[in-house]
Length: 255
Image (tube, rainbow, N blue to C red; front, top):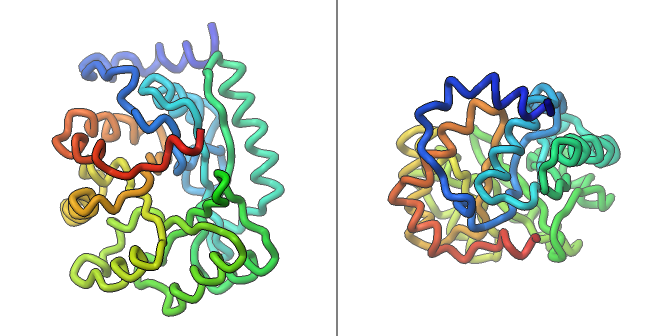
């Protein structure tokens, strides 16, 4: 019995009432935001958890995973070389368990005071021909130099993507920064679970506003653990799933 068959058998009772999901439910084919390397951040803690998450993504139609561990000097000082090495192990978990998944690694970079050094040293993990880089803002407030940081990135040939703009509470009542970023060419990645209500009503409402404006360039799971799967599945029966189909999504360009 394979490792995945063992996991499936163990969790089957809790999934008995799960609604059937079409094999092409994830029509975007590439998940470009997740935390599936065990033990490097606040994501999965074991290879078994990684496998459970990857199996379900594959079941829903995902063909390629670009996993993005946190990189921040204070909390998760991950290095590019160690993350590249970990990608090899994660791909092996998928392949050894019969998953037809391509696994790549990038990162989710905090725009902290140390980030400019990574830009200056060309030490960023990118993905896609456009050299996309996934970045996140602080939870209390955006960095005052966010425009300058993104300008430096573009000057070095990087294409910044702002992770989950719908989750920053300080942008709910004042969307000036978000509008400016959008107008200046910063791309936006929406969290799949925000649409499903995982982060609360305000985040869900803000996600819906981004969808109605058609400002969503990428959809990402931002999955941290198998526990997230049930909430993720609810997206497929949501009215907002139809709005997602109207977005100028770039995920498939990453295949």
